Image 1 (tube, rainbow, N blue to C red):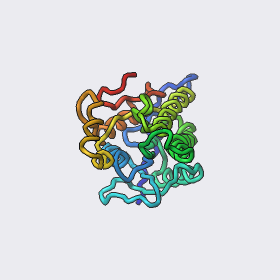
Image 2 (image 1 turned 90 degrees about the horizontal axis):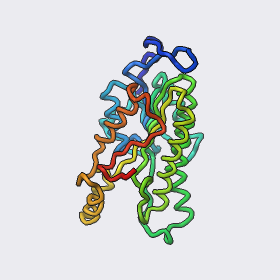
Image 3 (image 1 turned 90 degrees about the vertical axis):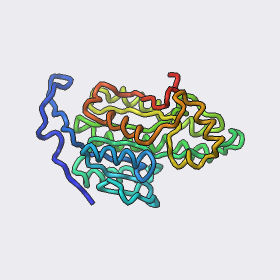
Length: 265
């Protein structure tokens, strides 16, 4: 299923841009691609953006099971470890939507929770390749479309582990720290382009992963969060909705804390 919206720049009011030129500001309704959209945070973000009036395309693995009530107007297969796959999926989604203003990347894996001495080099490379390499591939494909248009919003789901480093999760922590560094660098690089590049660093969020933990393990994870509870996918989606809005035009290269007070920087 596809849906095409009028180009956001056609009938909006012009605004001054660097160098004295003018560019068009987007209307409220935008076109969005969510990567890792079939479940968890990704599915919640699709629903929230759709509720805001956006046309949303969802991308995920070819083997993904999509919810019956998914609000994605286009569903595509993608392997974020393959840059060609990302480019093809992004191009197809943009064609189906009739344009693109928003890209949200939720693709990632946790990997095994185990001592570093038991973590193989292959495991480390697989996790970093998917979480960080995939984020880079998504960013490049997004920038190629958004920068020429002079407007866009890119958001990555990082993690509190990328700030603090989680014991027995060296590969995951390193991959998310890399996403944070990448966002800071690219956000600065394209700050004057009209395209913002930001990230969210959640602590533990209520997902099937948390539900599958023992009560004892859940208690340990909860004890690390000052507000005393896990976050929700709805809270993640609400923050994404703001970051991707035209109102969030003066923040780029930034990592938004969504950790219930756990983050200390």
